[in-house]
Length: 410
Image (cartoon, rainbow, N blue to C red; front, top):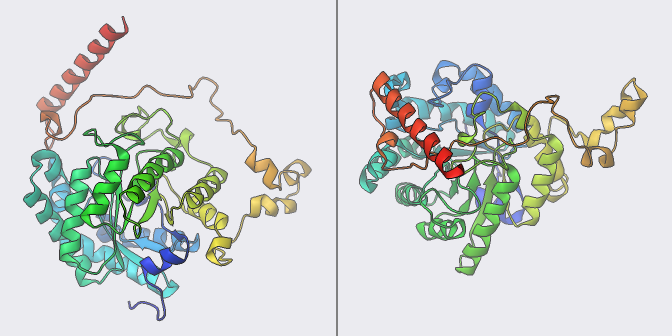
């Protein structure tokens, strides 16, 4: 499927104004029964292509300018990790199917197609640059062949691995814009590198667009990107753009590993979902902070992207999503009940404090904080399925951590 003629490139669009990304495919498709929680790999592009295609369509209708090929966690080592069956397809087959799908849906609408990379088990287990970059090049072969419009390197706990990925992509796919985003908080990555300094490291590695994705809510991610903006500009990287693709879940209580540390992860996060009005605030505050590539990650559904698109309609030349404008609930004027018609205003929805319907639920949760990362025995990854002995070791470690906490709090 060829690109539409006269379509502006990615960096040119960023220079002109906001560019809207899509949302989170693994969570959206898991909820629909097409992705397995745990591995979170994208073999659905082969096994359930129509489901993937439909989700691309919905994000486009909601106003996305960039659609990312569904290749999250598609490195060869991840597809085979811990006995997972997706390895039978292989990275080449999965990435080609993903590119075929996204190009078929996106190009007729004048959108841009992104290839995607993410963290690898090889880094967690070995911290070997040559091995990690070999995994990157395997994935990039298909993206290069398909001439994607941009690459998104995303979801890294360690800035070091992100640097290696960016360097490999810039070398293997010269001339293709590269975005790099970390899944870290407003303080540091998991090895203690300050967030602002992480941004500078990504710029030095050659990233054209830098930012934060996943693990934290829109407003914590925004605080993190603001620190990157300050440090990157102070370091003299004036041409670098910035991006943000947060969770659609509120996570004020999430610790160093983000929402993965929350006890509700991954099957009971729904009470934390952001409203569309919170998404409009997120879009406005991101734009005002100087961020131009604005999208979403896990939990983001098409209606969230629709809210982002609607909030930035004027900045996009009056663009309106194909799915229509909510316009702060103006459609409710057509409702049969007068008390619902009375909610058809910006003032009402901006000031609403939503209830959860769960009177015995707490506002915050107690996070799992094991304090381990790349290099620890329990973090080592392998192709063999997780056995009973490995689970026993993990449970024993958890018990020790709980005992330490009891002693500290005594």
